Image 1: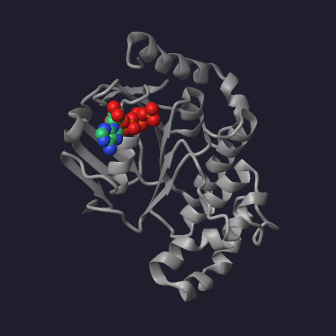
Image 2 (image 1 turned 60 degrees about the horizontal axis):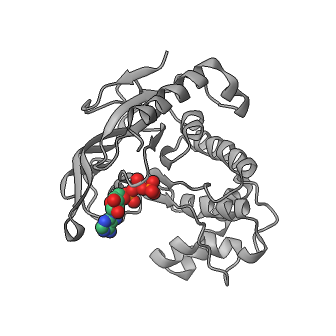
Length: 272
Ligand SMILES: Nc1ncnc2c1ncn2[C@@H]1O[C@H](COP(=O)(O)OP(=O)(O)OP(=O)(O)O)[C@@H](O)[C@H]1O
């Protein structure tokens, strides 16, 4: 059975093992200029090696939460702790991926992948990472495309390169903002399974923003359902389907029950 946590539970991940990596307490965000309250007292604990997803209606504050976790925006109140230290700005131990791969068209695949190292530590340090970049290229199935320019990559291949670029800095956590939503359905399913494989291989701690209920369920240990703005968690649902997951598990009655449960929030007005 799925484990259901009530709103206000400060640590919905208690059923999972692993030390807490991210700890958010009472995170609220108001955009003063437009007087918009985006988030209302969000509590969240992400445990090492777990995959969590957040799902909610458009405009409920999902991306705002991710930006606050990434240190790209400050919360109006509350605290964000990563690996025991407050997040006060962008950090090396945070990896991010967005809907668009945003590769530089004048750099080859491998040059794009080592770019974060080049920006951080200079050209020599980036060159020293080429072997590691090649290993990542193998990991994501891009072997043979090291010296190709982004214009010659498909959308899925570009996102694979973006995964490598995220992993090259060896982040402690992966923050994923709808990374495959621009892809067609088949490619998206395939990339989600690839993402799962990579996360399992690296025991990554990951947090995904998505609009897709099946995607959230098939990838996650826990799915957080968010209310309409101002966003707060209305339920945290533990997905007890065994790992590794496969696409045919979507026909499992347990999968259907979880999708139904999340969709129920939609009907009740959590998604408006
Ligand atoms: N920089 C900003 N200034 C003012 N308001 C903002 C800013 N960023 C976001 N907002 C507002 O905060 C609310 C939450 O936005 P956010 O992008 O976090 O939602 P979301 O859940 O990610 O939406 P979607 O699912 O459509 O991507 C929205 O009402 C949005 O207009």
